[in-house]
Image (cartoon, rainbow, N blue to C red; front, side):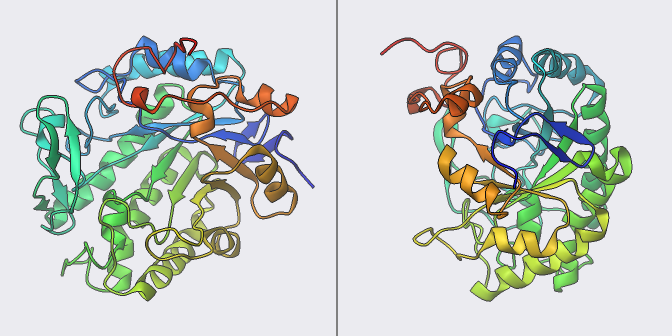
Length: 359
């Protein structure tokens, strides 16, 4: 049976190992949403991962939610990301771009002037968001998308996939959890629409299915993945009934199964987690034919055992990669990762990102 440091093939991608770098918002892009040389250095230093999934990248200015997060919506963004992908490829690694439309999880102070906040329905999410100029602020009151606007966002995901390939990415991953736009459409508590993108179960599935279809049509299924976490209530994603969660995601995974996605990136749920606790990894294995990447608080030994037992094909690590660029080497040597400083997670600049002063 395969183990953590064994090579793998996910769709069209050959991976040197099964240690995946999880997507992590770090807020090091420019205020305008462009990738920087600092980001190229950060990702390039972690090229020994079997696969890097970038931080969430908005497919449009409207899709941006957090301060200093990147956007990939036009050709002028490509050179900055090309520097990132070149750095990773120079180190022998693979990297995919994660498409993250935040929907209602946003604040106007973090967006370009005039870029509104939209959602399936005009329901404000309960919660606060950091802004550079105004500190912590409530999420915006979103505007309900018109039917033709939903169709246009599907087109934004298609464009994102095209631009990602132009920028040298090996593929793309749709962010379908954490309360962002695709999850907002799936959730009965945040989607009150009466058009073809809401109402029935089939209607709630339509937008994320169409978004994936567009990306697959553009660059092929062997370079497209999806990240999910059924039951995760993060960013006020709460269904009307607990049983809605499993019903929705089983139907969703069944609907996209014919697409032949290269991987599902699945955040596991454990006893004591808030929200609805399902065996997300077992659901993925049951309803997906490609690779399954498991995520959330694995150490190297547990990850190795999970892969060997067949519960998943790879494991993604977030916190372990923060202050430990050479994580793969450390796993191979049996050494523990460095401890990261949470104060540097979202702060601008190199400290805690590309520079790690000794304590």
